[in-house]
Image (cartoon, rainbow, N blue to C red; front, top):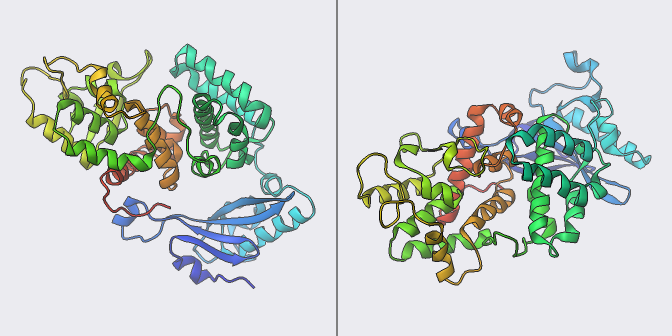
Length: 422
């Protein structure tokens, strides 16, 4: 007899709730939008924890149906096999879990049993090629070539033949472990490129989730120092921000703080003008000419309260009112040099560079904001995200999630208490 009841499923608070025999109800925290509607919980999912071939596996069963249907009731879903259903009542989740447990005991792959009636997903190698074909037109030729080459060298020999919907954090760890400390720069690139393939696969409905970067971070441990852009561990960034704010105010320090709070590149901060700032809409509308790459596209980023406060201070220090001046000008009113921002960290004898704060943010988002899809974090740092992914979340929702993510980042850096996303 299971521990949960239909009423308990409806009223369960955020967290993991055991029913018994490995079946769990997962309840996500509410999003900012749900909180404004008075909702106390987010999405609810069924998960089966099972041992297969001596290894513990977590099998997603589907989302929880709160309408109270019972197996056998007259319902349009009755002609759909239980293993193919994506929305399940408590009774249906127990039935599906029971089938998969019996299959595992018989030596059959529970993932394969769950998915056998779905359209077959491609292998990782085929998915990588498909993602490359779809996304490469927006990349430089060098990046497009390196994308496939690095995956073929490091990922394909390990997981290339595995179906993309069966790839978990442990599989990604197996790819990265040999190079995680030996070649940290390449490890970071392969990690990100595998995530791109898995996120693209999610947009194509080949898998039900984005890349499991949060779990991967725990499996691999802290990111080793090294590579082109040494990144400050995200746990150290709030103290560094506080130290910057305590020092004499200069345009260079304001620019660095703005870079950290917006996860932007140095060139984007140094080249931005007041016409790019929409303070009322809390948006930074960056034109293509200040973005990275010759094929760069215009990109808007949401502005958190901390970034807006920095802009207010920069406006108060503004001297040139003619035309469309730079937000963070150099001493003579022209564009600030990249060395002005970098020198602040170098003078403090820190082994990091400003660009590394983008990695700090990505690691923080993966580990501390698991309710936010990985694609949203990618968009926040202006990495290419397939348009199909954006459409899957709807454009308005996608922007709301980006705003929620940058809002939480700003509060985290300011040591403000925020609602836990764990």
